[in-house]
Length: 480
Image 1 (spheres, rainbow, N blue to C red):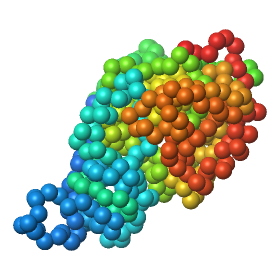
Image 2: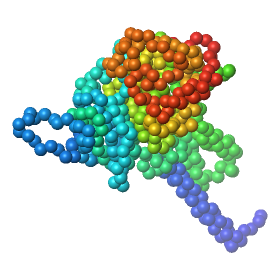
Image 3: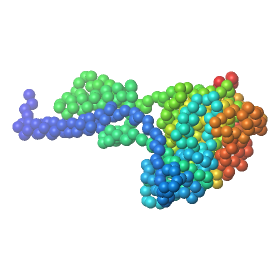
Image 4: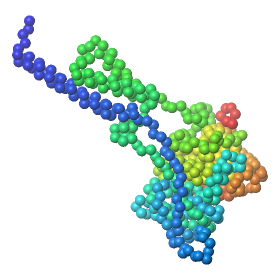
């Protein structure tokens, strides 16, 4: 028998105490897992932003002294009339008024540093619905409140006030329509930190993460209080099980299925579906009038610009699209955003009106010519400036794919019957047959408008020449 000296015994006891103290330190990472991992289980997908429109009355900067001999009626605002600085919390605004439909306005925005900057001049919105579509009734109801409204304009996210100047015509009851975009706040504290790393977990991912988190905490606590799994026969099985759970919880989730409306991935010698931000991606409101209207087929494309500022960042594009939809629906009265697609200056494509990107959805972008057309709008004002190359090429890619899907050869002439529209803005009387040489035209080719801008319009031929070589019809009939 081997004798152990008193000194050796004491040294062994001291080693055990040190080991026990070191084991207790494992409670710290266990506590850290509780504090940092538990908020992940509580994270939920944030609700989509809530976007609405508020009417803000404006007052004249120099009101006329009242005259008792005249009736108590609002004086018309004439050219040169300017409103006072009106506080506002909005990045997208428009003007509503009664009276002269040809009136035009300049909107100036004051930034947080006190500087005033003008937005592009605005006049009555050149959008219009076709008679017989669901848009007509709500648009008429909106017009009963104020006869006329401009297109919405982007004034920047740091705008603190606006003022309105009448450039031409006369107007009464001038009001600013301000789009209010309420984005849900980010999570606070540990939940906010977790959301920046993992984001919300759902379904199986959340269960696996929870089991792995709990198993890790229990394992650390057990070892801290004296369990020695390396001495047990089944220690390897325990380690393998915990490791498998951790791996399973960290494996990225499978990509979600394609959104509704996207056709299956295409192969062969014809255009593939261009990358785009679908409606759920930019926080679209649902179609407000039941179900969308559809034409029997798609025959041609119409190109627009939105007359917004060209000074916006990539992160602001979705806010602009969401604001345009809110303005179209809340101020102009449409059932949905009027355009079928929108393209920002960075080349990002946004799905517009609901109903399916491959289907002949009837929009509200060109009065008398919405049926059997697809409306593509460039975010920006191209009256005096050219669209960036990324935007120009993205519009070409989108048209190449969309017209190929519809079996439309844009190099061939086509004809269409001009439909009635409440705008009475068509270049032909309703019922006439209009003939066009190409299947890609602009808004001014069909309606009385300057859209898509004097600077861009001469490049329509260049756009057609860029689209045409890539037109390829996929097998099977076009979607109906």
